[in-house]
Amino acid sequence: MLIDFHTHIFPEKIAQSTINALANKSGTTPHTDGTVDGMLKALERASADIAVTLPVLTKASQFDSVTKFAISVNERFANATKKLISFAGMHPDCDDVDAKLKYLKSVGIKGIKIHPDYQATFFDDQRYIDIIKCAKKYDLIVVTHAGIDAGYMDQPVRCSIDRALKVIEQVNYDKLVLAHFGANRLWEEVERQIAGKNVYIDTAVTLPYIDKNTFLTILEKHGVDKILFATDCPWGDIKEGYEILKSYQLDKDVFDKITHKNALKLLGI
Image (cartoon, rainbow, N blue to C red; front, side):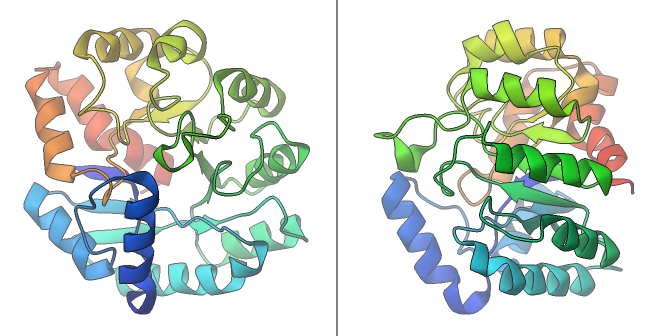
């Protein structure tokens, strides 16, 4: 079984324009057209089973429309064998955070995505801390972009190692996920400071770029139970990520935990 814990889709009417804009901003070539069907094709190519899709709110006012789309995706795939599971998005400018997260929980949403760079807010901002604490109250998974973002190379890193450590210490939440193996392109610092902390890390946009020895060192230090296979598809290719991980010839139990068992446990399925 294979679960990609970090992917992105968009409503069909805006998928092409959104993908084009993001590709131009980041200088990255997408591997799907950004649609639901495009993600299903990516799953098929990789013989993968589940893609967790993570919407990003660039404005607080997008909460209702993005949540509506997420619910529609989850309803469509509720009984499917190959499926997408959509999280919701939260923005630091959202009001009534408690009410919003309570609603997400009531409609079966399993988690939320935040993105400090696209939301122009540092990760240790009190508003993010309040959101994560509230998510903890409702047992919702929180995934955040961490480290360098290709679209914001000229900006400060808004979820840096030191800011991530502050939040981990303050919220102490075992359903917090730092994407991109703890902090994108800052993996030596992850090895020294993040590995071993009470936080999940995913492999989104990591496996094609990280040194194998660095990956294995972080794996050993952090512990296999807190690592999730992910590619950030369409910005990474699911099949390529899987083949790279497979080439490491990990112990079967370790490989299975990374590729699906940890995700199943975290998702509660």
